[in-house]
Length: 397
Ligand SMILES: Cc1cc2nc3c(=O)[nH]c(=O)nc-3n(C[C@H](O)[C@H](O)[C@H](O)COP(=O)(O)OP(=O)(O)OC[C@H]3O[C@@H](n4cnc5c(N)ncnc54)[C@H](O)[C@@H]3O)c2cc1C
Image 1 (cartoon, protein in one colour):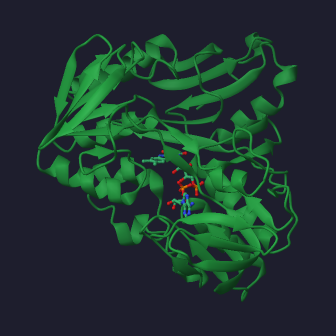
Image 2 (cartoon, rainbow, N blue to C red):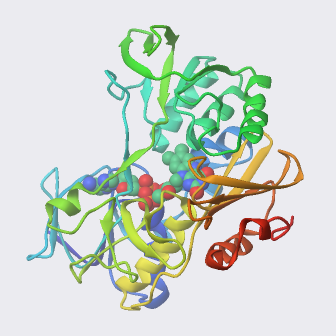
């Protein structure tokens, strides 16, 4: 059995930020990172962005987070199966036991799968660097790739793969690419980029079943039509990986429930990142699946592991880059909310506000508008004092 002062379960972006957060306050305490991933922590967003679009974006310099600089001990390719809170130990599926004084659960999420298809060399759920390497091989060989799910990761993978010369079919239940996130005119302009780059769109359709055979996959859609491809990427989102916490008797709702100091209901166990449901200072209780949250919350969790006892006060932003378009956003970006649009140039540069049924701003989309996320946070924090007619002109590029 190996004992660590600080033990982190999960080796993703939170693990890196937390190990660095610990080191801000404790230069020597031992840190262990047990991770299912076979790679040390890396910048996950690169898997669907720069690694496809920037030939100079090297793994070693830009993607690997070099968490070894913290002196952490890595146990890679290893799954934690259980936590014994009384003994303060975790046990892995291969029978190792590790003791801890402070534990951080940073297990992120498990991708949702496709009906009838198990992950394989041709069926990729696209969460890890291993998935990237495999898709890269297929794309470089000129494969036909079906991407199922037109959320932001599906959009980015589609753009990345098609810009590398492979053929891509995008299947999504929305009638327009981005229709769940963007107002209609913006979504149509966005979709046009996919058409211009030769992406085949199968919109308004869901996959009802799939099968893999030697050399390819066949997807059947809900209108009875089929898509035959060399490989399929499922971009169907994640379920937070909360089972470990739930089995250990910790409170789990949408995610592992934590306080403003990121503590679970066990005062030796913290949780952070995609897996944690936390009280946001501006937006209330929420769980966030984005990198800014992983980095900031991970750092705070690391500092609190080392006894800082500070509240997490950051309201995270998120961003995406697709073809020549890019945006940053704070809060909820969903067309289930009412929108107020404020364009400098329609569908090119501007701000979209998302309002709930009480006309309170719940989200702000900054379309090709940069370095304004603090202004967006201010709008969200002051939402009670703002009426919709006061929004245009409030954030300017
Ligand atoms: C392809 C892709 C592109 C993205 N692009 C963007 C973007 O453009 N903008 C943005 O804001 N966000 C983006 N994200 C989301 C962002 O990467 C995540 O929010 C962030 O990585 C979350 O960090 P985390 O540490 O909570 O989880 P992860 O980084 O997912 O790490 C979780 C870790 O836990 C491990 N694990 C899980 N269960 C166990 C267990 N039982 N035992 C041991 N280890 C376990 C996993 O193997 C993994 O190492 C993207 C994500 C992906 C997959």
